[in-house]
Length: 481
Image 1 (spheres, rainbow, N blue to C red):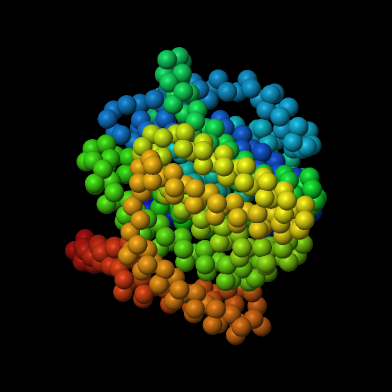
Image 2 (cartoon, rainbow, N blue to C red; image 1 turned 45 degrees about the vertical axis):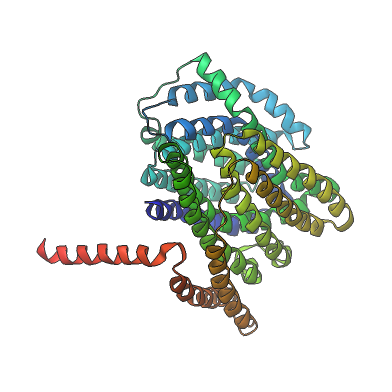
């Protein structure tokens, strides 16, 4: 079941990533660097605000709906979102204080509310393991965001207008899968339940907001200490790396985290740990080769995807940022599960607060001394620090299993892939970027797959065998039908 749900979530996120990639190709060619910087800074503020608004709601959904015991808090969640709307003017004022233009600030606040509505709706589907409906919602969002974004890009090339188009797309996408997510639920003002959700989710909300701030603070520092254009170049590289690499990891954690919660509640700690061992192996078997491979082919990706004004930065920055993502995945997609399972919400706060303080101090010093390069190296240092601290905290909360034998096999398969790609890098340097990328990715897959099968990473043999048997059964039934 874990593998099947992971495949569905992975398909949803790959579909989203493909359209996100198309957006990057178009936007970095149509928008001026400063206008794209406005969009990225506005989007960063919207992401931070949406995290503040939705974290407690999503945590309540995950804890209550995922148990499958008949609990339904969707009415209270809808009421909570409705009560947040009157705070929009305050959020606009805060946005203006960050240095954003008035039009960008207004559009960013609008996007934050749209993101809150969409992500909370998707969390309801994830908690009840409606993977196919989750996929449908992701498809709607990807298509609408891309379609409206491209229209705006060629119509006005304004960062604020692009933020507004994304807001409209998210609201429309949510409306299209509303029934599957919310059913017949209506806003229900249950003060006791809302207070309970707020109290339980306050540490988690604060910590997730700090994490979001830690992930975007360097952009605002770069814009302040260097320029909005540098923030745009840096943001384009960071977002491209994240779109490509975080998505596979989220696909895995989207499947295994609710299962871990249920197994711990129904079958006990030992069963949950066995599940988490397999989950970590699957997580790294997907994420580690992706990150290492991305770092090796970053020059080709930059030439193929990014606009001319963004390519030079992407070529040298993306390999460093890809390595930072490895530590980010381990922290957020695996180690933080310990805090959820142990109900140690304060540990989210400790970890993310420390990451933010470290990131602000180190990035400010490095940006002041080295400019854009300082922001890149500061990001790597912050993610490494955060991962080490999260591991230490997890030993106190719910000790997450670390199956070194399984992880060593993942490392060996990844090393085989990296060696094959590196050996061909010089040979394909003269080829067009698209062709060179195809050759390098093909070589990496050809090297990784047989080693992964030989080691049976994440029980790949059973998964492939089951798929083959199902296909064979369907083939046999077709002539009879």
